Amino acid sequence: MKPITETDCDFICELQAPCFQLLSPEEIALVQTSKTQVQFRKGDNLTKQGTFASYVLFVVKGLAIQYIESDHTKSYNLRIIQSGEFVGLSSVFSTNTFNYSSVAITDCHVFLVEKSAISQIIATNGNFGLGLIRRYSEQNVNLYDTLRKVMYKQMNGRMADALLYIDGFKIQYPEIFQLLARKDIADFAGISTESAVKLLKSLEKDGMIVLNGKDITILNRTSLVELGKFG
Figure 1 (spheres, rainbow, N blue to C red):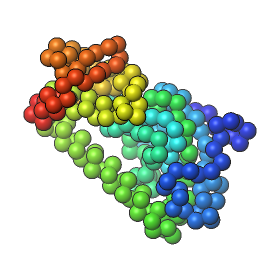
Figure 2: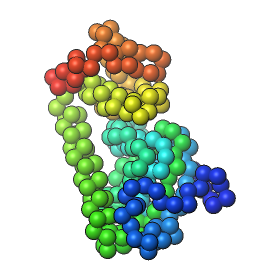
Figure 3: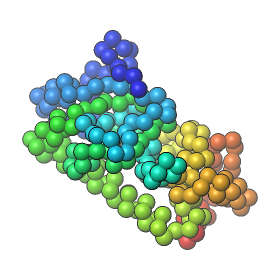
C-alpha cells in the first residue's frame, strides 16, 4: 500500500464518479478533506476481516476480490469488486469492524474516506444516502443468493455458477480468468483447489469450456447454465 500525494502523476484532484455528483460543493469539500488516496499493489489486502474500520473505501481503478475467512487455511470468495464500488459500507450502517476481507487482483487506486464524513453526508443528503443504501442492499441480496448456492448445490453446479459469474466480467476485462489462480476459482465455488482442477478438466472433456493456461473460454453456455441449475 502506497499513499498517493498531490505531487504524484496518479493523484486525482476531482471527484468524478457519478455517486459524488449528488453532493453539494460543501459536501464535496468535506469528502476532499476527509479522504486519502492510496495505491494498493496486486496481492495487497484492501480490508481485513475483524479489523477496526475507521474509513470506507471507494475503488477508483482496479479489481479486487471480497471474501470471508473461516480459519487460517479456508476462505470463500463472495464477489469481484470493480472500479466505482464502495468497500466497507457495513461499517457505516452497523459494525465498527470489517466483516470480510478483500484483496487486490490488479493494482488498485482507492480513496479512503473517513467513516464519520460519510455518515454526516448521509444525514443531510437523502439522494446520496439512498444511493448508498441501494448499493448495500444489492450486495446483501447477492450474498443471500451466494449462500443459497453453497448450501443447496452440488460441486458441479457451484463450479458452473462460478465460471458463469467470472465470465460475466470478460467483456470489460478480457483477462479476468488470467488474473485468478485456480484456488480463486475454487473459492468462488466453495470447493477444494484439487476438486476445482478435476472439474475444469471434466468440463473441458465434455466440450463446455476450453482451458488455455490460466485462461478459460466458455464454449457451450447453454449446457453450463443448465449444469448450474440442476448440477
